[in-house]
Image 1 (cartoon, rainbow, N blue to C red):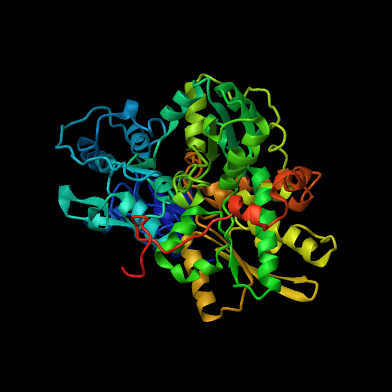
Image 2: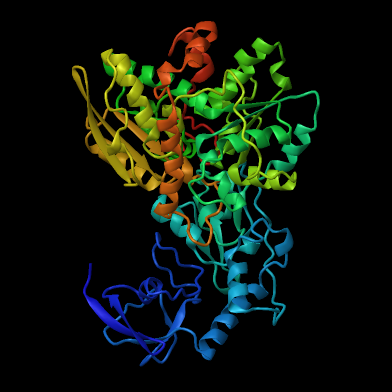
Length: 589
């Protein structure tokens, strides 16, 4: 903590910490300045100029996000001249912005709209020249509308500083400035990994998920289809926020009941297939560990991470687990075992997944995941899309009486629940791998070293005659850092978990937009969402994946054994180096 100094704000003295920016100091003493380009987790851009203040002795307005406080500094935050200047700046942004607020995805949850309201912009002073760009719909996961971009640069800084992908940047100057991919190519032809973190920090609707809600509503009215939905762990931890509920509210049972009201015939839990993933991944790890296989083994359930590895680190592909993700494992079982069990044609089963992640839309379209040419997950919608569908259908989620998941694929262990938070996959895997290898019950099944939001977490676990060193990385920037460690010291770890989104799935690119109290990447928000999953885990009678009796029955009736020939055909896949367009290289660029 720095030294305390005194600044004068609007003619009143306030003690503040030395070394802070004016904005940081004012935030702490209760003066919230308007802002658009600023984000506390990203570098300072100073581009929007909304946060300007008057500082005695300065001939010009001062951007509070860049200037530091000083002893005795006299600051004015709300003079008539400042209010007019901010309003003028905002009006210039609005004059070139599309006039479609009522039909915009972010209507009612738009920072530009909120700022216009708080600053007092009641009318448009000018009808400025409008941007005329085509909307980029090339990606199965992300939609880009440059016409709604306000050039704050938050998406660029997120992609470069946190994720380290550098898929987008500014081009041109002045009115012609815009945010584009390299060579202004469509998103689907760029190095974008579909993580959707740019969506979470975008203050408008310049970036959003690709919507499949209209298609899903149409499919739900098809009486010939068997309509099945699965929901990921992180969905139940956050969907309540879209209905005004406090973060950290468990909405599992209400969501199940609501999905039935929407028209689904069966509501299954992705946590069941998370247990299945642990069985396959755990046995795969033990096989590599005991038979001189390629180590460290790296988890494979994050589709944005997989695309990143295929594009930028193809040398690490042999280290990645061949397991499909829990979503794809569930869909695989639905289109094979379950279809046979109920005597249905797999093509008549509509397999829908509700995910916190926009990259799952991309995953659902991957050719490698098909079985005998049959697609597995037919439609993926995000938590945000489900919330809209519930509201559109006139269903009151909050007051809906909760219901249980359907049998067979609705039962899960506590280990499966924590898949939704960084470190959870590793923790779940270790709970089972330890007991399967040692033959004894692990005493403390909560691995606290792997919890929390530190970028890279490490732990060492003694498993019988072996000391297993594991690591967890969340956010692609941290994933790249851990790959550099592995490059320098290949034997340092035996098992690594990588999640593309900071915080894991609870902070996926398809989760509800953070409310006014929070902002994207806010750790308090992530902790509250994570607490839901940890509480569910502790409430479960069975907390280890291999003890799930429905998983045991599935192997007995159909899959035969973990990592066996049948389970490999249905539950595993292979990855190869790809160009940004998704085309496999033939050894050359």
